[in-house]
Structures are given as structure tokens and as C-alpha cells.
Length: 254
Image (cartoon, rainbow, N blue to C red):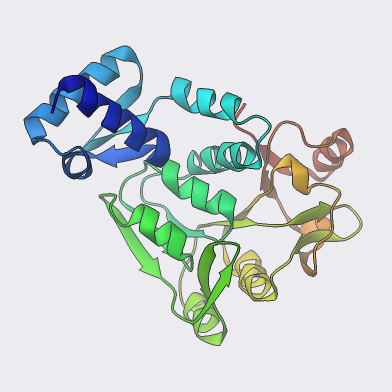
């Protein structure tokens, strides 16, 4: 295979998955380790990727380009939220990642090493399983399917979760409103997320700007019960004032 073809395959893989280790790229191209390392070095010099121990991640410049190209696309907003969330994960953390699409996007950007990830999302498991230096714990339970999201719920998952220490939880919602709080459409997810708000040291709610001013079926908590929210910069001005008054930490990618 010619160099141009190999590099094109590497670029396509990283644009889709945001990060990779050398073993995975060797299988995806396919090519020898020495060849892939040479191609990765070239892409690093061009600024397409950044080399990390044991692998590489898409460069910030390329990620911002992805956001720009998808500016009018809900996927772009979820990707932006997911990227900001992944930046909060530090080496040694014990975290929970929920089943929403923004959480799925988050899992693609995680580069921290020696972390423990607890999740009930099949999508997150498939994304993180190939990554090195991540201890992955999957909650058992009843399997649910919603809009191409596969996750577990029910009493078994809840009982397991009660016995696990979580430093940081990352969950998604379908609605954020001052009068009705944080809400979600799926009753099974609501039960899990309500527990996490009680038991986690910190809970981060992932909600892009389209979720504000909306109500969903099931309330997770009141508006003043969340201390950390990850969103996009276009969320309504009135909420910025409310968050300031309540001293809520608002995290965006920009």
C-alpha cells in the first residue's frame, strides 16, 4: 500500500474515533508498526494529530474544524459537549459515563490514563474497550434500546451502583428549565441518574444549548440541585444569569 493511501486511512480513523493506539492503527491500515509510526510522525509534524504515550489523539485544530463543519448539526453540538467533558477526566479518576449521545461522544475523546470507568452504555464500552490503561466496569441489568443507544437499567444495575465509589459522574438530560429542573425522557435512565446525583462526589450534566427551556417526561432533580453543567456557548442569556447567582460551574469548549 502506498504512503498516501495509508495516511488517508489513518486520517479517516482519527476523524471518526478521535484517538487511537498503535496496535489498533496497525490493524486498521493494515501496516507494520514501524511503518505506522513513520506515518504518525509525519501527521504530527503537519499538526493533524498529537502523539501521546502509546498512541495519538486528533489535534485541537482538527477537532475545532469538525465543530465548525457541523455547526448547524446536532451531532456537532454533542461532539463539542463531549470534548469539553473528556477534558475534565484526570489520571487516576474513578468516573461514571451515562448512556446519552453526548456521553458517547465524550468517550471518544478521553486520553487520561490509569482511570476507572463505570458505565451502563454498550456504546461507551465499545468505544473505550480498545484503549489502553483504562479499567472498564460494565453494569449488568435489563438491556434497553433507545434511538440507537444500548444500555442497562433496573434493580440489578442500581444495586451494583450503590456499592461502587464514583468521583465524577457524567450524565445527559433532555430538558433544562428553571421552573421544572433537569428532565429526561427515559424513566429507566432517570432512576440511575437520580442515584448518581446522590452518591457521586461530583455530577456533571451534559446538555447542549438546544436542551434549555425544555421539559421532558421525568424529572431528575430541581434546577438548583446541579453544581456543574457542560454545555455549548449558545445557551440562553437568562440561564447564564441564573447560573451565576447559584454559583454553578459552567464548562464549555470555548
